[in-house]
Image 1: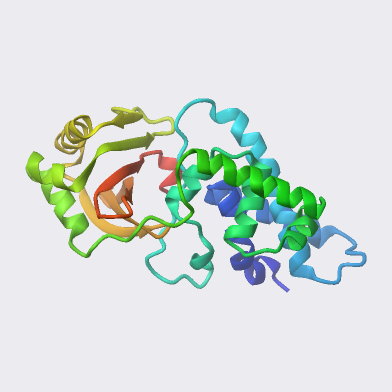
Image 2: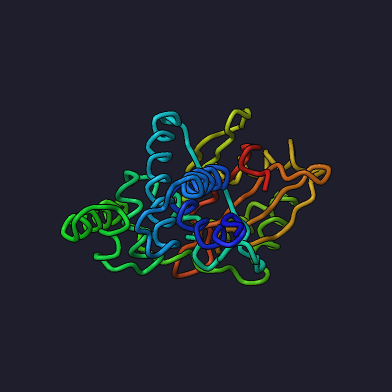
Length: 277
């Protein structure tokens, strides 16, 4: 039996939601499956539960290691298209992009408990079994995680989807330099967060409507005029994909205000390592 083929679609959302990286998620899955295949498998009654537990804990270990290397730089999750069905991945179990960014504020164990409860609807008993601690610890860790998120004044619902014309209006306004049109589309305190990896970028963080409009028009006129721009859905949120000679070079994911369709955050991924998939 090919465990990679049979179980990858089940295991991937667990690993990716904890790690925010496709490559790291695949590494975690491969490590666990390889060890399982080579083990003697004593007293394993439920194979998939055993593998899920292994992937969760391996992902936590990888996340702990990675957090030590990213430092204070803005680190954004690797985007995944959720626009079309994929037979290899259950995209309904992929967390929204804004939530993945927010979860970076939690430690890996808090993040895992929160994800298991909120995304996979695990009971505290199931979480305790998967993570090898008590039910009471599960409750305490979840409570701590929710309090940390509440301090950042975020709720746990995904960003609302844009109207069919929303992204077209936005990119047309950028292309034409229409400041007044952009002012109607952007929140006054809009933020642009950019992850360039090892690539040089214009700005890592920009805050405020006037500054953001200047930045986005400048970036388009200086770098993106010849690019092909495609509307998409990334981690259940509206996105624009920028292609240079057929190669994806920038993914912009939009977080919208809940009471209207004004943009409150643009997550801009330029890091080539996160645009390979």
